[in-house]
Length: 246
Image 1 (cartoon, rainbow, N blue to C red):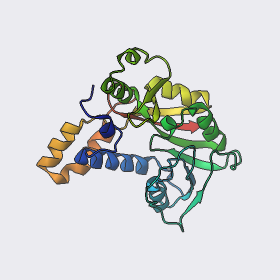
Image 2 (image 1 turned 180 degrees about the horizontal axis):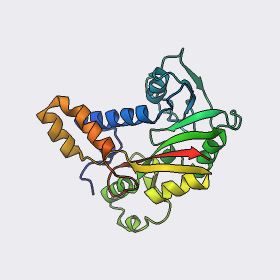
Image 3 (image 1 turned 180 degrees about the vertical axis):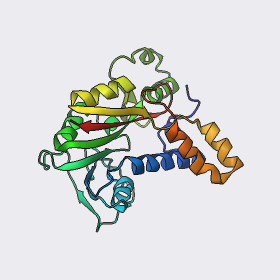
Image 4 (image 1 turned 90 degrees about the vertical axis):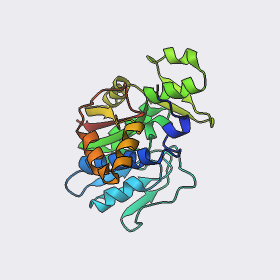
């Protein structure tokens, strides 16, 4: 189990160098994942704007849903309004079938959305054939760490079922194993390309390397992304999956 408080595991704490590394990994992963040619990208990541801005800079047309079953309160929007269109909506009924080329569901969107099956079903519906989705969820590692921190020991044996984990702030997250995430995507009619931890390098390793040489960030990011960790859900607080509509 990771000896880090729950607020740090969620990325909202002060574990500075590690989260700098984490954000760099996520940005580079998205850069490698985005379509090569200009495309229509739907961003369901909570209205924070970081992912929309990156996709727009890469030349894509971006539709950002800012109220997709949750809104990030108090967060500044980071996008260029001339390149990203914002839509306020609780679901995707406003979009016709097969209308977008790619869907981003970052910021743990499908873990905050407890009825993830319905949400992924909507994602599959609006994707064009051959379109892809990038999905980030909380892992069982994170869920078990939070439960252990709150002394919910009996819940730690229930990893074969849907795992709903209460945070100390009263919110609830849905945590996934790699197999459960694959099933979620497959049952919606998507073909899974890969599932992997977002990061496998530990905070202590990252802190040690960056303290020795602050220029090592790019090397650390490349090392992380080149690691062969598909379907390994024994490490990492978040899982990331790429899936394609058949």
